[in-house]
Length: 229
Image (cartoon, rainbow, N blue to C red; front, side, top):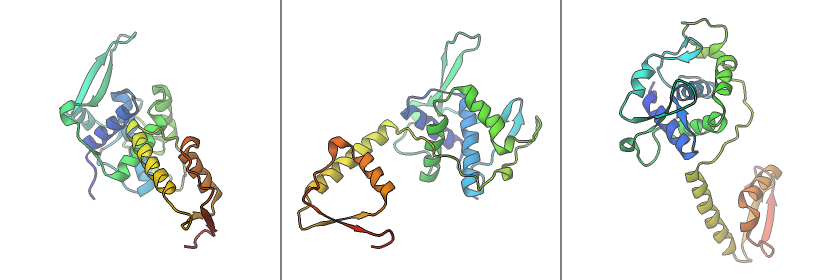
């Protein structure tokens, strides 16, 4: 089984966080990785990494993560706080930044969902969910290895509120402009076939936006039943 290197997953999490102007510390970074493990197993029925997670003090942890986070690919910035201990912000180092993704598309989408849900939550809220609401942490004692086989794969979480990154918003604007120009160039003799699905039509209207809706007054529109082409 080919598993994604943990370092690449960390880098992808930090990339997504930077796109959303989210500051990430070590505790948060490790817990987001753990949640990615949980949701990947829920979707695929297999592990995302080969990390040996254990119940360490108050939550899921793995000793090997310390060595990974010491790698030169990560920059650490110390930020003064009102408490005695400074906050250490993690980010991708300038020398390690590259065009594109650090992980494949499926894992990238999963991490977008994780960041969309938990990226801007307060740390106590994230920790509370990790400690008390994820199956591998149920009925374990400190020092126990976490068993991902306990995850309920039939469980369907509620819709995750994704917050688009600046790069994604730019792509959406460019695509919207191309579609708008294309629709305006269609002559009266052309037909537009619209799937008869109210939810889909509502989504299209929401996506188009009132300010960029093309004028379709004189264009013939045919409605076809779902499944018919």
